[in-house]
Image 1 (cartoon, one colour):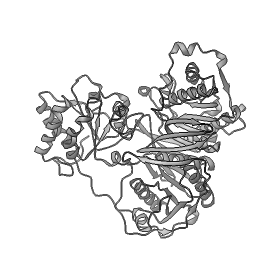
Image 2: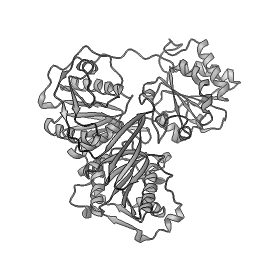
Image 3: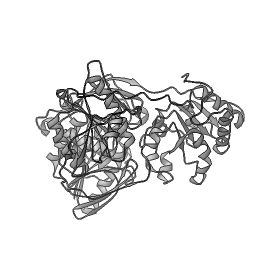
Image 4: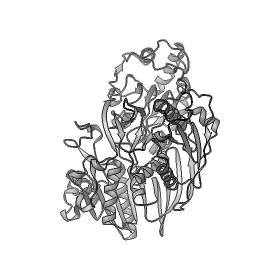
Amino acid sequence: MRIAVLVKQVPNFESLRLGGDRRLERTGHQLEMNPYCRRAVAQGVHLARESGGECVVLTLGPPAAEDCLREAVACGAVHGVLISDEAFAGSDTLATARALAAALVRLGPFDLVLCGRNSVDAETGQTPAQIAELLDLPMAAGVRELTLKDTMLVVRCEHDDGWLRTELPLPALLTCAERLIHPAKAAPAERADVRAGRISRLNATELGPGPWGDAASMTVVGASRRLDSTRLRLRFDGDVDAQVERAVVKLAELGAFDTDPEPPLLPVPQPSGDPSAGDIVVLAEPGRDRLTRELLGRAALLAAATGRIVTSLGPAPLSPTLAGSWGADVVATISGSDAEQDIAEGLAAWCSARHPWAVLAPSTMWGREIAGRVAARLGAGLVGDAVDVVTNPQGELVCWKPAFSGGLVAAVTCRSTTRFATVRGGTLRLLAPRAAVARRAPDLLVVRRGAARGAVREFDDDLEALEVAPAVVCLGAAVPPEDYPLLDPLRHALGAELAATRKVTDQGWQPRARQIGVTGRSVAPRLYVAIGTSGKFANMAGARGAGLVLGINSDSTAPLFEAVDVGVVADWRDAVPRLVTAMEQHGLRHGSPLLARGSTR
């Protein structure tokens, strides 16, 4: 069995910084293999040994990225290939996918291509889907369990809030989940011992005429805004009662318990729109009503500003009345197949004929694969994991995309006539429904190619729970699961959802969808409460978007207190009941009027 593993070199989490060209600055910082790619290397080496085959590792990057290849070879790969050339500078995900796909064709054929689920320095997860489309390969994302049976792969995939079981034929492309296998790691001395002949290079000329790099990129990075909030880092002296009392008063002053204002109304339906201008399409994922409603509401605002109409398109039938109330002018159903690869092929043909102005999809495993495949097939720009989509004074679609673990957002535009974006759930405000009925359009019939077999989806959580909660209580390993009921009064008082650190989800105490941090999820509630966590960067990076952070830890030296607005130094068992009592004494309950209005931060 011949296996290719695609890896990426990323900066160490603490050294993430933007350069003068608004791209990731990689020089002068500690660099390492992307954590998800370590799983791909380990799995590739394991499968190669089991099958008597070979594992080849490739990376696209500057000369310094050779260190990743040396580490992979030290861990058991037979060969490393560095794809490096100044011509590749400025590559977006599509240009990167094209270069890597060209290298795989040149070095192939391969039975299996393995990638990390995503890269921690830019949460997109779309490059593997684009490579799969360019090579016409079936794909499974977030693989957590893998069995090889003759020429078929049997996989169990870790998705946003559940699991997907399926079989797919070889050759195929897989992205590896964090817990698929122990990560591949090698010490510096072991990397240094790798012979020079085990590493080779490919340049742009060897891959073909191109275009490559910036010339092949369909997205443009513009202005950026830093989001690093300066937390207040307040800690109060005294016993637990005194600390909690002062903490509650301060949080109330800062607006931690404020109720949301009434949502604005959706704009009136567009009666016709300009057909030549192209419509705004929302790709509606089955079972994601909240995400669909967010996207349709924003699409309606964009349509009102640009004179376009909004089309809702998805595999699950959506009633014209409901679609219209959420912001759609037209609603259509995708029929014939519910497989992502099939939907992408049909949607690409539909877009080629109709030329929509923009396509908005949810930033889920489902949305990323479909949008990634369609953008690759059409050669169109795709912005992944946007947190806002607006128009600028020139009428261009601007997608604000987070990077560097949420430390900043950058304005990204597309060069293509149809613009694609996946949008993170919970970041677009819901608008009040309108009295409107969408026009029913003919179904989009897609062809079932039958690459994947027997797909079974299971759900173990609610993807939208953390995204819409006004408060999130994140638990560390210091809170055992048998004590979770002790937190119910606090959760009910705040209207909060539970989340967890990686150590907790590793133990299976909470679903993987509840993991907060660099290799988990990012959340942006009004109030984030960290209980029994150390507060290390990898975890707290996922809470950067929170309005206010309250931390409870008995260790006064814990790094947690450098990342909070208000800190209580106490055992959580003592502090939490007092916190609930203090809130009740001040009349602070979920949805109740507060002592102070608005935030003073």
